[in-house]
Length: 296
Image (tube, rainbow, N blue to C red; front, side, top):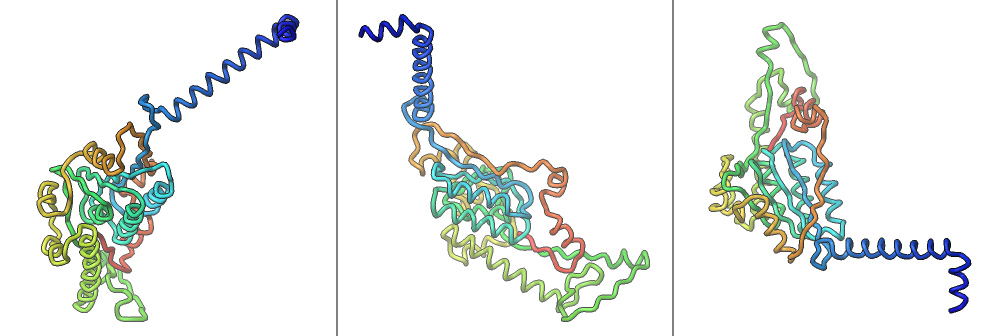
């Protein structure tokens, strides 16, 4: 005891500095502990839910799918809300998003919250989730496929422009905008549309637990309101985003407060806004007309 007093008496500055340092360390440690374990002030660590935004025309699945995979692999994310506000888009990207949502639902609860519109390809994506929640006035459904085949032949005739194409097979330039479709080409495209339509129907039937015959009866391309979709079995609940979050919390057995991890980050490029995020590859394809552009 005497030695301690002699030290404090001989080195009052260092002794005081050591006490202050110790006190600061204890305060910082206590704050970190409470922030980590008592984030909501109720004695529990905050839960984390992921949010995936699917917005605008679906033309490229890469950004959305990377974010979905990040959430799938993140052990802190207990469940995921997929917020869809999309009228659909190109077939393959919609299928890729749907597959990513299904993989996610195999590991964590996934609830879709539909905004103003979640139709065609937007509805295709939604069918990969465990539960679909729509507003009564959401425009959804529109189960079907269309092939856009532009034709500028009359314009070329007016300006005196001619094009000659040499092909290796009968259907290599089918859908060219410089010539009308032949009956054989029309039948060829119809078979492609029919096959893609069957894929859409199959995805809906599996996702909604419906028979293929039931889906085909509803899949004439028409859109439905959220209320109609509920009556037809195309969605599970009516409600806004908050309702969808409550359903997801119950599925994850979460009673405490939640932090949301949202993404992917929104693009700010002007062309992305003007083109509805349609990539240049799709634009060139549509303009060149070497093939039809198939859309959900």
